[in-house]
Every structure is written in C-alpha cells, then in structure tokens.
Length: 250
Image (cartoon, rainbow, N blue to C red; front, side):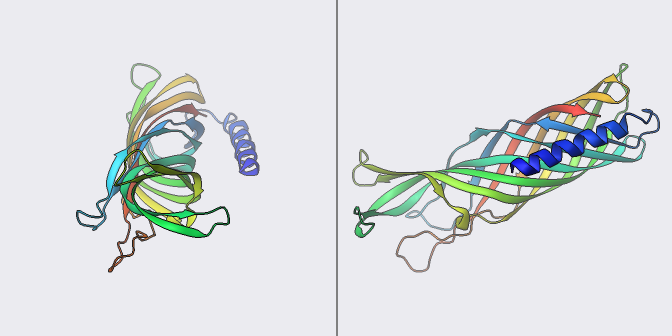
C-alpha cells in the first residue's frame, strides 16, 4: 500500500502542474484529494429464526481518503470517478459456539455462546457518479449534487470477537484482530448519493466539502454459522456508511 500511495501522490502532482497551465474557462476537468471520516454499519439479513437471530450491535466511526477526477462534458454537468481507500465495518451479535482448545491447539470443549463481532474492513473503491453543479453562486461559491455507483474491492478483513457464554454472562472468550478474509466477499457494490459545495480560492484551486450516503446493496458475508445444525444458516449482511469529506480540487 505504501507504493500505491506514492504513485497516487506523484500522479496528483503531475496533473496539478498540467492543470495550472490551462485557464479556468477552458478546463473541462478537475482533479483533487480528500479525507473523509465516516460512520459505518452492517445490516444483517439472516434467516436463523429466534434461536439463531442476527442483530446489529452498533456502528463504527472510521476514516477514508482518496483522489477525485471529474470530467465536465457539458457546462456544470460532470462524470466523476477516482480512487478511494475506505475503512468500513460495524458490529453484529449472533449465537455461535466457541471451541475451547488446550495449549497444543487441541479441542477440549464446545461452549454455547453469543458472539459479539466487530468488523474491521478496508476497501479500495472506484466510484462512478454523475455530478450536477449550480456553477458560481455569490461569487466563488457553488453547490453540487451527485448520484451513482461505487465498486469496492476488499483489501483487508479482520475482526475483534468476544464470545459470551449464554449460561453465565460473566464468562467470555476473546479473539482479537482475527483474520476473516475468507468470510468476506472480495467485491462490494453500493449506491452513492451526495451533496457538497466548492469555494474557489484561485482560478484552479478550490476547497471541496460535503456529505455522501454510501448504501451497500450486495452481500458482503460468505460464511455459514458454525453451529452443528441442519440446514446450515447462511450469513448475509450489507455494509453502508455516511461520510463527511473535505479536500482540495485543482
């Protein structure tokens, strides 16, 4: 990832230098970078009945960053894309057995528990959105809206797990920073709706800010509940987030 960040920064600098040689009236594109804190959650959709009920256990406050590229094919209407690195996740609660093992990693017992899982996911997102802008209002200020799709590719998937024994709530087993890559789908698709504004400082430099709602509509989970029951319970969940972003456009 360090190499890819260096490449992205180098590309930004080259495009900025090229962009500054063209007047603001003639430019049909802009390019920028942004930082975007987000509130992320996972909505489960699992047919487990009352005995194996999956519930959301809260949201997470996370962070993202990225680069934007917007092409204005007609005045004030643009096609927007870019590259975003987004940290997502959420918390789920559901029944799951815990296998107690000895020092030699040999199973000794199976305990009936409720699992409290905190998902720690990292994605590389490629958005494709339509952007409509008001153009300059009150001098250098403009407002825009966006609508489109986001395709995300999994970079990392880990979890912090706490198994709480059903028959004794004061007894729990923890497994932190667990690799759950095999339990999470590689691709995630989402709907993007946003509104924002820009404030132009100079001909080719603007402050960019706004808020996006990123609504996941594909299943991110691949596994089955490990309980020894028939038929098996397929896990299903959709990840969404709301982000506030601030950046610079050139």
